[in-house]
Length: 325
Image (cartoon, rainbow, N blue to C red):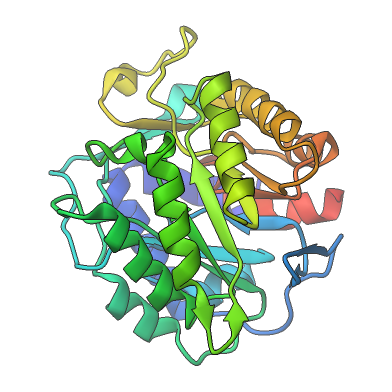
């Protein structure tokens, strides 16, 4: 039995959000040294990822444990989502384990200490892998496009790449920005903000798995038209599979983890078909084993991102995936 398997009952005995905070604290103390494993390196927009396994945004929102996370073996760590101004997020409780389904429901609501504080933590530090910064808009913003452009401009000065997150279901109206022409306006403003000292910082777009086929195709076309460098498919889902058994399955929020696997696979295939090889696609959602990571990569994903699976599989999942690759 692994060390994490022995520790997990103790973590599951406490509130999910408190367990998350304890994990980030521990990783921030442990830190990380040495090089990230080089396994199947991937290049996107001139940026080399030492391996194709990344950490999805949401775990380390405020950039507190970047070194420790790279120490787990991730080729890329994406912090955020970060908003121009700090915000508390939605009322607690807002994070729920669906243990019987190996899933998670969250309605965090972009809780973070603000982009300036997070970037100050990671600025000027050398990272073992690729550092991504995921940006969003404040819930009470009067101009969300301006929020994104501001976030991209600030993050681009520090990050290796920046992700525009319009896929969260926990900020009212945010997902409306995934539709054209609103998406074109947002991407144009964000793309203009990504230039730093003559350097064109790679810009990624993260969309929801709940987009229908036409909606996803529209998002892909908008990304290509606006010279976005990669598409992340996707985030949590507001849908609920009939197979869910956990008592908290009906909690409001986005569902992630194993129950998202089939939907995430299908949307990856759709996005790849829509892009026709013009846009790298990063797979996220339900990747909980070396076999699943390999399946997504063999399907055509440029990279994979994991997060919720760490709750059930533990930090050793990263190196198990790398070993399989």
